[in-house]
Image (tube, rainbow, N blue to C red; front, side, top):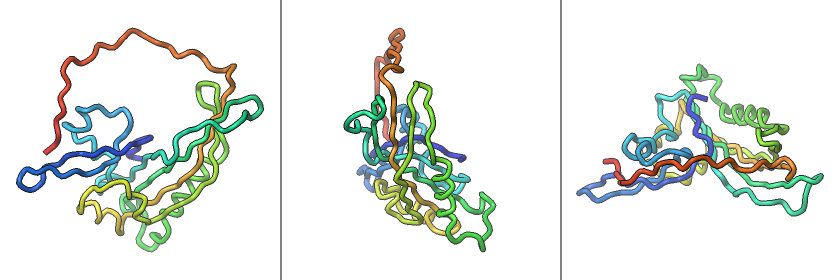
Length: 198
């Protein structure tokens, strides 16, 4: 993946409209992006399809993590549902025109294969992924966002896109939980200003 955003969240960005009346567009932004990166440095465009990219992917939370009633073999278990969104620039990926049909479906299959099974985390817990569903070449994948008319062309050939929705289970034993390490306070910025892009 050339552009990977991890778990994203939607943000409304004010853009300058006609007669200086702001219009608002909703974009996916990565977690941890600062005000300066998002607004002044146009970081809100990082996860928008762009023909300069080979591909991009990010995740959305469809259902937040919540405790599953009871315990599994003495472990605490939490479950949520996420969507992995992907967009592909087929010419940059070397996909020939006669191979284009169903390419997003092939990508979705590979994503599911990579996520099948479970794996440990670095805090003594275990993740499991299940209940996969796939959307390919379906504009509802981007229904949370309104990038504007320029992005519509990036949803047609020679581009392809899709999403894989799945449940995430996180299991951990209370005996393996280590206390949160708290360090020295970080010096706060004394003056914070919002600067909308133009």
